[in-house]
Length: 410
Image (cartoon, rainbow, N blue to C red; front, side, top):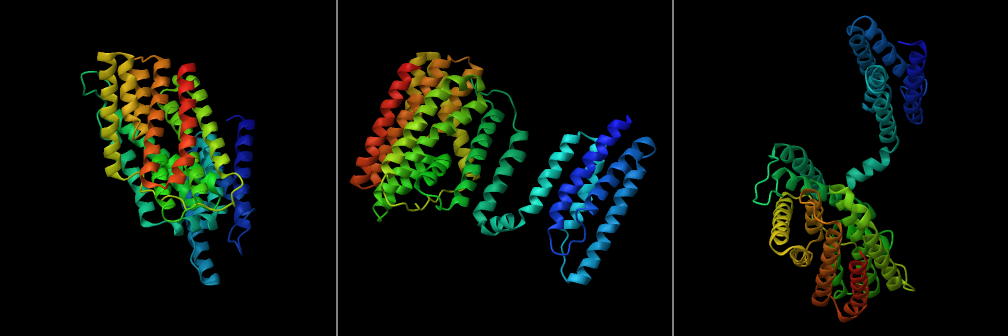
């Protein structure tokens, strides 16, 4: 190798080891710190360079030597501190491997893994607190997401199974993974917040998981003494943020539609948040109990969403085939009553598969969102009290009028 290249690799290795060692140095009576970790990384780099020049056994011998050192240091730590911890020893082995990876593999991967490793070591109290605060259903959610993503998705065939050639089992399940992943991330945010950051933030995060569930839960609580002012503000915030969620999902499915969709979606989001702020204006700041939302990755819900998406996609293709654009709008209005994700994803899919006109696609998504506002208004009327209906009814009316304007201007 070029001498300058070798010098660069050793410099990266020493700096990466120093970053990890700096974090370890802050621990009480560390067995390795800011001096040892750079040496471990440099040893990994040296062994990898020698292995390239002579034989791969040199790298294996170096790793075994580090393993023996880690075991010995762990035994000494146990006898001195009467406590058993393997974190530092594992960090040393990984640091050696990262030093070698700087030579054998793409350097940016070694650097990225080293930075993530330092962050994991630094945020130990927060990570332990987060893990201990999880309930069984939260762990199930993560496991089930891994199941639907890494077990089910790879085995599904990628061949269309309908007469319009728009439904593929793998594509259908990929949409399930996408929506479940976004819902799981929002669900985690909801659990972390716990209602501690005020009405608007609580409503925004609740809307990212499910604006319908947020509306339903808070409407019920107003009959149990929940503040109407705070509940109405949270409902409007949840109803506003759903437009950003839809834009994000559609952008992943068909990025070409995003430039036309982002303006009306952002406009509706801003209107929703402004309405929420106005509803909460001059009210005593208080935390709103966030809605209890079920596991967003449960297999039963995944199957239901897959079926809904497939049916909506088929109906959209059939409606367009037999009725033209009018059929698209009818299906969008009906489907948007109860679920926005399925119809938005289906429309985006038709843009890519069936070359659906962009203007028609954007209008169909907005029409679905307007239908969803009507449905949520009905939920408030059925489950909430009259004051809540009056306040949210005005807000949904403004959003509905904004949606009509957006359809006209697209």
